[in-house]
Length: 315
Image (cartoon, rainbow, N blue to C red):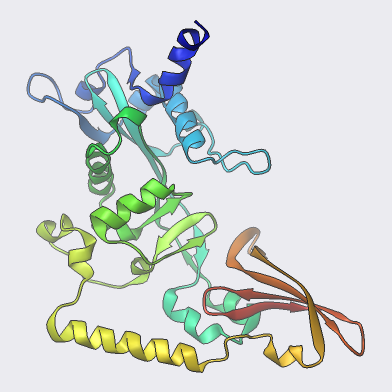
């Protein structure tokens, strides 16, 4: 009896949200001209009408991505309180999912600039920071029972088309879930990425390339980026040289200090640096405390995982 009483509450996160209006027709997919699920950009008036429903879906997404815990709150503000662009996935009056996008200003280091910062410290790191303004996918959610049925791709393609983004690598992804990362890998071959100020950026974001044709734009990224023939061999040779150069480099930036100092603490963590009025994510790495054997003086050092470079060194 208790189970049956709680059944609606247990099933609610898995089911579509029924709306008091025909969402599909408001998106421009009127029946009977169109059957089945559809996705499109919602006008602000429609977003306001569905404000409570969208906030309820946003709460589901927040729980699924574990954005709010006892110690950390990364939840987004209410959709009704922002001007973020909303895309809806609907069938008739049933709301099956939504996406939320907006332009965000982020300080990031391009992949090519990271190689020369092994010993430059935070000064070199800060000098390589670039201000970028990508279109950010802030939220992306499909109701539980409809996941892994191709509807995510339908909604994602609507976002790309509506925002004029020809390649998924040109988006920034806010607190992406593991299923979202797997989705991007499966459909677009996107793998190499970094986390910058809570946003996932792919290396290809920084690549300057001519815009592909409309036919090329729908081809998965793995086909667009994969070299062939002699180009493939050349790329493999370059990777081999880079790997060898990495092996030849000093693996431990703290090695010069270890002769006179003894390590007594080390912990993997993430460093944030206050830059231009806001906290910027400087990446994950190891914070280490070393004590001078003769002086007793304690050194705090932070070595970033990406490139094994020290970007903090203080007494």
